[in-house]
Amino acid sequence: MTETPRCRLCGERLGERRCPALDALICSTCCGTHRLKSISCPPSCPYLLAAERRRRARRARELGKAWAGFSQALERRGLSSLLPYLELLRGGLAQLLHRYPVEDEEVMTSLKYLARRLSPIELVEPYVPKLGELLEQGLAPLLERGRIAPEALREACEVLASFIEGFATEGESDRFVAALLGTYPPEEPETTGLILRP
Image 1 (tube, one colour):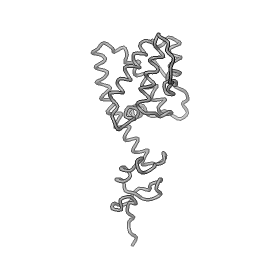
Image 2 (tube, rainbow, N blue to C red):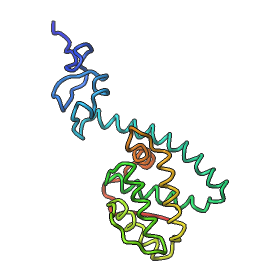
Image 3 (tube, one colour):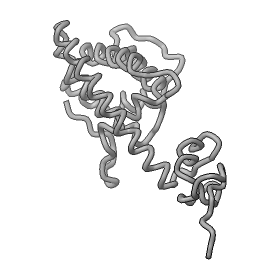
Image 4 (cartoon, one colour):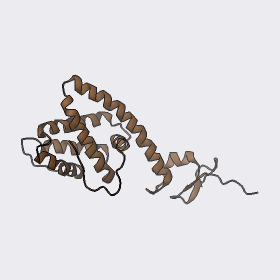
């Protein structure tokens, strides 16, 4: 009679998951507790991927509730005209974040960068965030064709950066990013370029 293998980490519970990083069986509790902390999980680990999908789905639900309240507050303040611009920014950011993952701080920095670039006063930028540069490039054709108003987009960038600051939590540096990626699932692999619609 063969003995059921125990978790390599705790030695108490059954080892039911093959950990690719440890090349050993571990229990689900230790997997969740040590994932990306004391275990260097490879990005292809199915348990890591499943956990990230669940986290994004939870954060997307939280974002949906927070966004509904935020939208109502904008309407009460007479700023409902910014809502299409905010949706444009959210969709564009999500497309970029699926390819260039960053944390919430970088998203806020990029939005503030774009807001300064849209200002009528031309400023020399000491630091150009990659995400901000990509977002600016994606929006440039719409701005050039007059499909979106620069001043409204500038204000939307500032408002969205402020929202993210309130939505972000200490200890989770990518709460907004995870929520946005859960709200806007990845597109089909053959899609190329940034597609933004006003």
